[in-house]
Length: 103
Image (tube, rainbow, N blue to C red; front, side):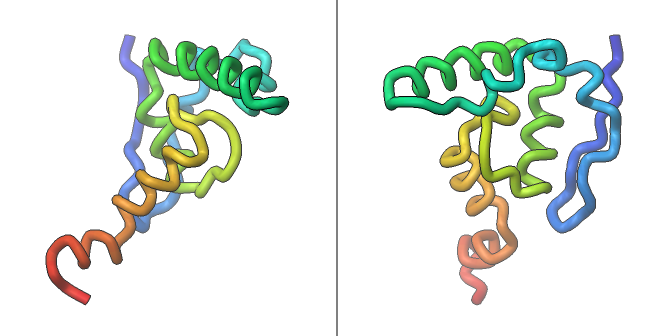
């Protein structure tokens, strides 16, 4: 099976391919990917969501979409909000310039 996927480019528009039609989560309860509750139950729910993402054929497209759109809540592409903040900081043009010694 070929999965249509157009990766998001830095500064470009959002992923436009119909990647969600192939997502492992498309029939799952959405609440799984938006954990709430006390610390232990939230962590357990997040880990269950990440296990669904781990075997997903469009995980990279989902993560690219979340980064391009700035998704602030939920598990997307197998990552939490905090993990995406770190990835976004690494991908931002200003962080690339700092890494290259430019200001």
